[in-house]
Amino acid sequence: MSKSDSGAPIDHREPVNLRDVAELARPRIDASAWDYYAGGARDELSLRGNRVAWERIPLHYRVLTGHAERDLKTQILGQPTSMPVMIAPTAFHRLAHPEGELATARAASAAGVIMMLSTLSTVDMEAVCAAGPGPIWFQLYVYKDRGLTRDLVHRAEAAGCKAIVVTVDAAIIGTRERDVRNGFHLPPGIECRNLVGTGFEEVSARAGQSGLAAYVKDWLEPALTWEDVDWLRSVTRLPILVKGVIRVDDARRAADYGAVGVVVSNHGGRQLDTAPATADVLGPIADAVGDRVNLLVDGGVRRGTDVVKALALGAQAVLLGRPVLWGLGWKGQAGVEQVLEMMRRELDEAMALSGCGDISTVTRDLVTGGT
Image (cartoon, rainbow, N blue to C red; front, side, top):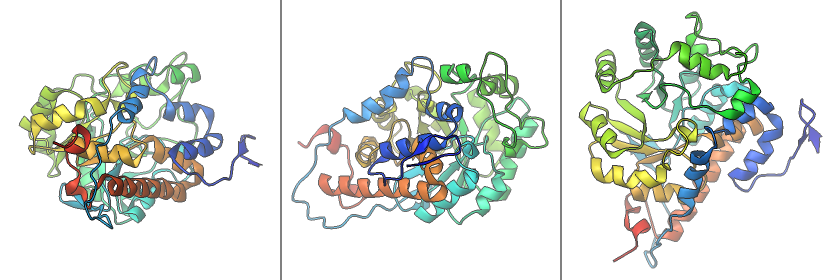
């Protein structure tokens, strides 16, 4: 085995699944950054619960359906994608690889999937959008400074982003004890590039606490209301999606306030610990909102079978977060491409063995059983 810059041994075996990618990535990523990516809130119950919930849902496969090949293509908000897997908006990609979000965007474009870009990107949104022809959606944190927030939205429009995804479950940062222990902050040379020149670009060390938690407390709006969705709609032509919904009534309100989509998400188990697993609330939300909004889901998706289950429960696509960072840390753009290809192969296999020829045939009876 060779060694990383930190002296840790690097395993050069080819990964078979996403867990293997994580093992290969870990020695290449700084320990504090790894904990930031991997960790959850408090006891990390929701973090683990997200994964367990997908695992315990059985797939009631069909037989003798005659599908020799599968078509994984679909559309989300009218935008074509090669499969119902999107890249979730995660922050600080340059902590995993020097090319950061540029490498991720190029991989997304090569794979033909949609990428959501975080407000807290370590590469300017204009550069990320120019990195490839694939669609980019912009994930928005609402700052106390509404002029700054409006400017971010207008920049995203001008850069070519195709949607705004507003995160609504981060009034404060849930305590991530790994980050508190590590005093998490951005090292010299890495900053929030979309905020350069505003005074909000640095996530600095804070004694005895997470620098990110302090950043959010200082600068982000802690008192968002549904009227703020109206405000966002008034300042942009782009479609608005609401990310961070785990309740039926909130999903209905999102539709009532003009959101075109809802991301069923508990922030990857990083906000309120003991929040329900997204797999457990997705079905009831889908039943409640019907086709009023596009439904996406994240949290613990690690297998192609998870994608089939999410579609059967009513989602149009899943968002993949941590595994993308693992691929990026392992070997940059090529690593992200390999992660997406793993998901593609697993999804194709799961659809074949479930008796599904295309996305339209992935229906609720696959998780409830045939009658």
